[in-house]
Length: 338
Image (cartoon, rainbow, N blue to C red; front, top):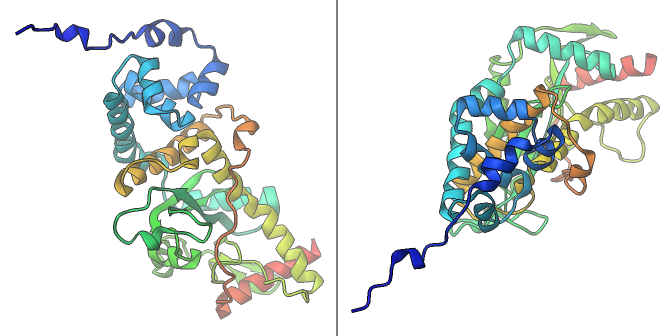
């Protein structure tokens, strides 16, 4: 029987591009191809493995096909897949707790000062919203993941500070859930209601005691710690209109954060052919990378954002409570006297 050498069937790969070309990258090329500066990349390399990191970043940043990335780096397609999933899993386990943290009392005070100086909103410590992440329809309960936009997704709920850094993320709720329901499931609601997140630090604003709060859109309920706009029924008072304008202008920080997240890490714009668990690690890794790049002042190119902004989801919520009304009234009076 004629035996054919195995080498005939093996595709010879070259690592010349990685070994020779990448070391000559300019700073602009690092930003363009890997969505981060060389310094940020080297920081990751000190914690993880350089070439595997570069392969994973290339996939997350460009959403290129696995086969094209395998040719570029001179490795097998399966290796690319393993690199991406191993990297995302490692980032979630090793870096997430360092980079995305619930704020302590000192940090809350700092965030409130920034919001007040930047947008004139006293006691505000963040803004939050939800964004849909495309997925393959799961075999089980696939209807629950089919969102009102007509495709399968999981929901990323995030809270950001005034600079657009994530300080809390919750991921995995099925795409057909209302934003207010996702908030209840996330654990953030329970933390605040039990007094484990926002300390009882209040300011008297126009005769109303206002504690720390975050900004949400009309889909969320009004709470003492969650300020939402007045529902525009065509009969809003001038004071209410001013309040809506000022809070909406500040809340754009979370919309911008989602735009920059998806613009920088374009794998989030199209469904990824992996299960929900691996998708979760991938999205969390992108959130961590977003924070790292923002904290290090890495260049972000506005053309990356085109078509990525999150659209409002869910019907309006009319849920209110007395404490929330009191705080919102105080802020409304303040804004119309400024």
